[in-house]
Amino acid sequence: MDMTKGSLWDKILIFALPLAACSILQQLFNSADVAVVGRFAGSEALAAVGGNGSVISLLINLFVGLSVGANVVISSYVGKKNGQKVCEAVHTVFVLALISGVILIFLGGLVAKPLLALMGTPEEVLNLAVLYLRIYFLGMPFVMVYNFGSAILRSVGDTRRPLYCLVLSGVINVILNLILVIGFQLSVVGVALATVASNGVSAGLMVYFLTHAKEEREIVRLDLHNLKLKKEYVISVIKIGAPAGIQGMVFSFSNVCIQSAINGFGTSAIAGSSAELNYEYITYFMSSSFAQAAVTFTSQNFGAGEYKRCMKVWGLCSVFGIGITGLLSLICVGGRDFFIRIFSRDPEVKEFAEIRFLRVELFEWMTCIYEVMGGVLRGRGNSLTPALITVLGSCGLRILWIYTVFQKYNDYSVLMTVYPVSWIVTSIGMFCAFYVSVQKH
Image (cartoon, rainbow, N blue to C red; front, side, top):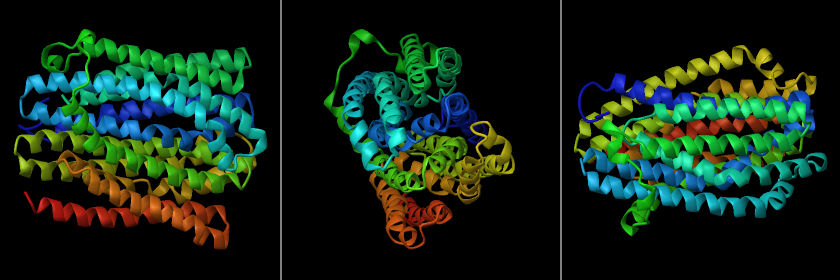
């Protein structure tokens, strides 16, 4: 896909919708983990698996941020039509993926129990949560290979092959969940093993697609005999990706603080919040896909000197993202009774889930406002500014809210209200930075 010429709206949709489908499909398969343990292993198992989301994000977001840097660097060289640098960058990025995965195996095993205990995870849930997390992190090399590989393919506009990887691996995940949890009564262990196995399948398919790239994707073809780290590309990837990764980590840290506050309301609150969170992820991924489109399209056009097209990219990604994300949010909120029952029929769990639907999910479209502007800034090579704004506007405000407003009222609804408030503040800050930046070109 040549993003520097021709109409933009159709190319953005062709790029973003399969990317959104990838993330949503991945979340649906992850939701299958939660649904299976919730219906067949009880609320404690549901809380153990679902309550780990913020911890997993906290530990892996730095490396996922590096994959964003990889996407920007490779896309920029693609826009400049520099095939040699594209090839060298691809092989460096793949080595980074493997290193990241190995680091995460040890990091996850080391901090799982202390971190979950620090979060105030209820005693009846703690051991199950630790067990799930340690098994889950054994599959981190697979997760990193898939994420970095997807970033490589996105740089040439290919968002369909990552989707193919997830379709097959996701079906395998669901089948293994049913066999291991229902058939063998393995509870959270079965869910974790199924996830590791399915991640291995998606990583294997990604390697196959990269090593057998043909025609227009041949520029990013991977040769496993030519893997090497080149300092030039490592520095470029870290320069752009590290701020995004640190932003993700701090963002997740704020969510860990919120999860700690949720834990104080007991197992039903953890289970209810975990059940609703699956739908938040689905709508957020639609917003995120247009932000990723903004990153890649801006990178290619900025590298080619097409500055006016960068502004068109921002406008189209914002309109599509806000509209489609808002529609998904309305569907989820309108059908919340049905959607909650998929995970649990416990009336207490339902009550907490419903509060989160109305306080958070209804306003999820707001995330697209600042995410797309941040994506454009990253595509222009400025990753630090959107990271700082998001850290201060979303993460900092959420932590402040927990220790001020929430401490005063100590109410679950008040705790959930921090999400839309933080999105408004972050969007205002991001717009100011965006306006200043675009005046330069």
